[in-house]
Length: 163
Image (cartoon, rainbow, N blue to C red):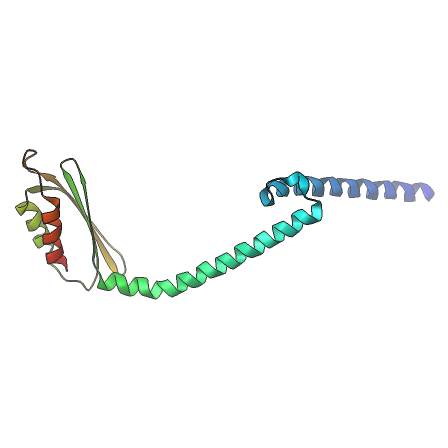
């Protein structure tokens, strides 16, 4: 009977030693994540710093979720009301990106007419519709490289058509 108790005690001791080694290894992995010089921290200090860091992150998540909830109604209403126009140029290539709401009525052919009147030849046109917005992308190239296109004039005329 004494032999059985000693063997079970040895097994418990061995399991406890393995558990302690595993905890030490895990703390060694955690320490550099919470402090720049992990050798200065004890095990409980590492756990305290990790706990406070997790609480800070949870607070930040809640703050961002609240901001997101506040902004969502504004994003939907502003996307339906305000068209957004962005024009980029590369050499003789002009890219017009336009975002409008579904309620915004304008004639797409008017935009194409403006580009053609200002010396642009349409190369590519794409659009995508979501639940509350329409995204347009028009790629054009200058008809004549020597003449080119006056971007500021194009932008002003497009704003007149869109807004």
